[in-house]
Length: 448
Image (cartoon, rainbow, N blue to C red; front, top):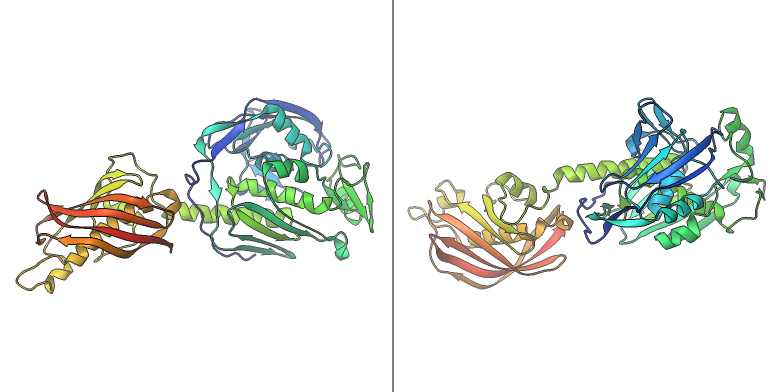
């Protein structure tokens, strides 16, 4: 397996899109594909940030298994979750339906270890979700949004995620000896998912049936819930629902397996011969990258008037000694203004040469202090986490009084405009309630 790093946005980004759960509970009954057991399944509403969890109502204490990639244990013909002694088989179809329909939080209760297979597609789960209804919640959705390619190669399977503002999948399905090679590329929206992906049924090649049965799998399988490809022919109870039904089901599986990462994706997946193994490997890589990113990202945006310590400043700005020009933030309003403090001491290295016997803080470093406070105002926005602020220009600069060792510099910044990658701020430095320098600064944000 190989992978390339990606950066992802923190969980509070894209706050205009709310998390969603079910408006009510809905239930169904059926037969499990691999175990052949009768099973009842109920999807239920869940609180924000709950994610997807499975509850085994048939076991003592009704244990719950969280649907996350860390719990994936086996991926032969389906995805199985294991936590302790509790197992949940074939989770991909119900997770695919929930994720594909834009649901973020749900509890899936079952009285067996595998959901009903129904007709082998996710259509029945979509119908169940629509029966329950979908409602918004008062928390923003969580996203992965890679800004550079992510690549997984496992055996003959290759999965790549490319930066894209939408969620897209381009998939190539290749059967044995090149049979039933199919390709589909589409943007995945709830509407498209419901009509074009959810009805696609699971399939198996005839030469794989006996080995699966020998392993004790597909005990509940039949032509009513799977399509069997034999040679160049297709065996099923009904005609193919789409000429390219196989690749559509592969896309269905990708969506379900990636739901184990716990976030929606904004990116373009290019998949060649995908399978549950590579799919869940990709989910694991995304989860790892997100954890690494959040470890380096600034803390959540503070309330207005809250102080930022030097530790929080250093998690926001890349500057270090001797070029960090702000010690703390004593006032902060997101995307509006901030006031920083810089204690000027004789220990500043520039005083050795500016000037010997008459130490004065250089005016250019006062401008730098203003630019750093202005950068904090923009870089504390979650979507800008991890970026670097580059000073671009200064207008209306005035230096009114010198700044000496022992002075405390209060650095005021008011944003005049703040676009995605460009900010303009009116700034001033104050000592003893007198303005010592001021100006309007223009700076841009770039990725590190």
